[in-house]
Image (tube, rainbow, N blue to C red; front, side, top):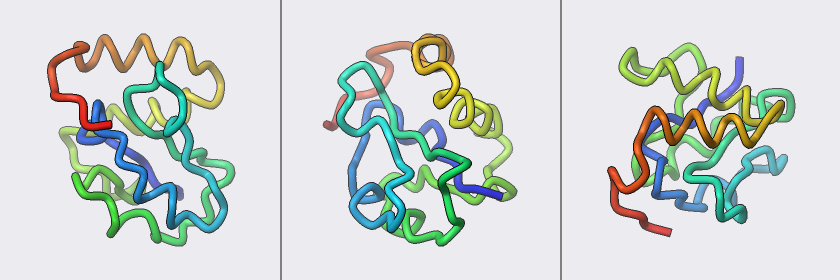
Length: 103
């Protein structure tokens, strides 16, 4: 099991989770093209340090992702295989400009 970042992170990208991660497995904070953050499933040690600090409650244990956001689980994994295609998929799932940017 790993942790997953879901839709509430899109266009927010708050870095509180990045700051507390002991293994630096959260990516996308410093990449302008990324509209959200991503947890690398092979690096995540399931410590849960990131979950309580997320101001938009976007981080979940993989088995606990709410049904309305289950489609974000493969998005987190795919980012580390093909970031460009994942960015396009995020744009398809959540149209740019559909939420206020809070970077």
